[in-house]
Amino acid sequence: MKLYHYIAKPNTALEEGILSFANNPNADLRYYFKRSNETTHEGIVKWMENCFEGRSRGIRGFSEPVKWTNDSLSLKDFIDNADMYSIDLEALDKDGLLEAIYISPSVADCPTLKEQWDCDELLIKLYDYKDISVRPINWSVCNDELGRRFAYVPYYIIVIKGGVIPPKYITKE
Image (cartoon, rainbow, N blue to C red; front, top):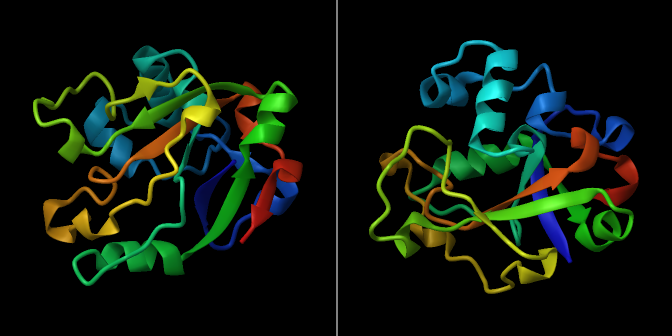
């Protein structure tokens, strides 16, 4: 089973692997400033770990490649400015690097969800990577005007031992 991850171009993923937030001192902090009230990489890492242990070593993945529509042109920019990598979950698990996996369900599937400011998204721990849904994603629900490009589609956070997915577990697509 694969998950798909995007990294801005240029990148060193094929040499260094996919870095989690904790292992990426060059990570874009802007999104987390407002969510965490922290202003440094170290502060945001601590805040993430307060969400749950391992959150800062988590790496986001989608069960299929991201698709854009005329209502989500920011996704087109996201795709055009990034390299897509597939992650071999079976090999990560077999080699003992996969600590945990969480799903962030579509907010459309959670009608009673109330925004919480103590964590950056709703995350539900899965028992096994094999519990990842293989149903097609409805990308048409993404809408730039709503300001949350991935809130309406499910995605996954995989917690990796050491916070880096080594290059041997990824393929540039």
